[in-house]
Length: 345
Picture (tube, helix red, strand yellow):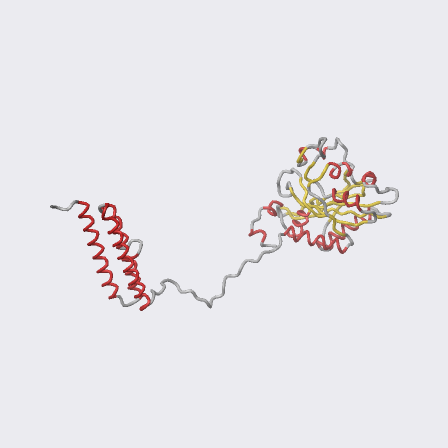
């Protein structure tokens, strides 16, 4: 009686396993160095070795023979692996090929982190004003209508309240006040005066928000330093002296600064502060901020007697100060987080 086709497949696979085991052990016994041993491992035990290539034959083995054939396959595999391990322990592993690692070579230097140019500028400005007797005050970035407008003598119909010029978070209603991202650090001077009796001399540094179109000198989020000095007999001369002293202490004795008459609801008289800086290769006058004598209405809003006290306030843009200090011609570069740019400072 002739064997079935599946029986012939079973017989063929068992013979193939027998041949692999026999030839594998014979070739392994003949290997004499680590390189030859590695070649043997690849030929018999590798992912494309003889044991792997024979496994697809299992699908043609008779169903009743598969357990026995599978057991034989595992036996051959374990026999070859054990023999390989013994041989490897005798002659070692193959030497690594390719370029050698020179452990005496100096390592690559690690890139060191550093403070962002704006953070450094804030620290430098704070240090200069501290030498002039100013302490530091702080306040929230999310403000209410009273501190951002009313207490600063900004009337209800003033264009500064227009939604197009502010980031409003909610409209005022019966359950709570109108909320917005502060448009100036002048809100901090109100909060400071509400809880501090004069005389006082403070600066406030922080982020402010205005929906400006981004260009070389404007951004929708930027930083301001707000200064406030309240005492008896404070005059415009004190304000001008403080600003000029700051400019020359920070930028050097050659710093060019000017003040132009202007108008702000919270100061009277008021002025714009300009400084010459390099824009696209040419020196131009750039506005750093505004300043003036604190309006009597602002003093009354916080409970100060304007007949006894006088004071000045100023607000300067930190980004524009940094641009002048470090020769940066585009404010947008400060927020792009390009390491090549930031590593220059």
